[in-house]
Length: 500
Image (cartoon, rainbow, N blue to C red; front, side, top):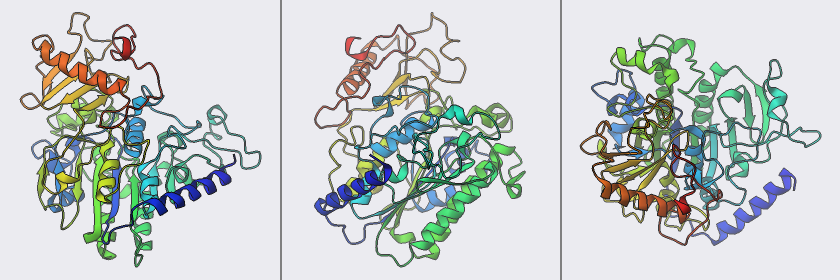
């Protein structure tokens, strides 16, 4: 089926579902979800007052006006799997993506018939817009022949980017968004996409200013509309290439990465100013977060020598199974609902955004969605989250699992499971098979209790296995993982979970 027919069919299905859905309540808020790329927990000054040396007035002001979540986690410690979980309410390792990230020029990681938070909100009457980085795969088609281009066709300059005019049959507007402006991932950032078409090539240093401008233009365009909107704003910064604009270079006094963080923080201020200018602040739920921890490309050791700790008090960074890999900034402002200057220490995950929006609209989540999503709406009101999920599952770049349950965290890895030393290859074979930490008394994950508390290890391991084998971690009918044999212990001989 060609992309035009698919889009018509998707629209008709959406129209039918919208007719079945409960009507919008008066006062349903606009939703702005701004997610940074590789921004560490400690990069936000108000989250890291002792060792946060980068000025972040935008995030700090948002926190003063709203709520800080201190125990929020991405679905994984790298880009693509986190974004899949956010969009679908389902952990990415339940799909074919068992480790690493996607690289484009392939069919979408999100199945065509799987609901997304965008399609759900669209069907509920929201205008849905995505501006920024997608990184969930899509194909580029030759506009004449309709045949897909191959990544290897664009491996070398000057033909090193998808051509202008290339069509995208399975991108954001085919996964629930009414409009899209952005790019696929860092290595294809020069190819600017509008809707389902590559419309121009631009130098990478222009991308962050472009996304800020487009976000403000979108908000301005909604002035006077009675239709609520969902703005998904996945920035490509401060991920590599680290390219602060000339006016931001040298601003931090800490190097290019810190300059880029400051420029990224400016987007929060620009969005807030646009909302205020258009009298939308009081009717907008604004979520600010990141997709994983800070990357080694930021020169973490150099920043530490200057007094800035990118992960705050937590161990590790991007790609790792330790908390520095996946504990993320998460700040929510919602005037008249969220108390200014408040905080929540309750455990949440980016997979939870889908279920939260459904409860906000007083609707059920769509069938075939949200297997790993729990609403945190109660926390926004200062109440306890009622969860049917035992714990949150963490996942590293190499596919190593960890399970967080109450104060306990079980990691099925000998080392970081990622890029921080000791990596799995560097870890001694005499080291314990796994790691167990009390995340209340040992937030730096320095005292491994794996061998001394076998009963806790066994309990958490049993919960993890059950959540994997059921195809879901929340209450509801058993589901199926797309990948039939999920290996639990990545540093051991490969054994699927259902025979481990």
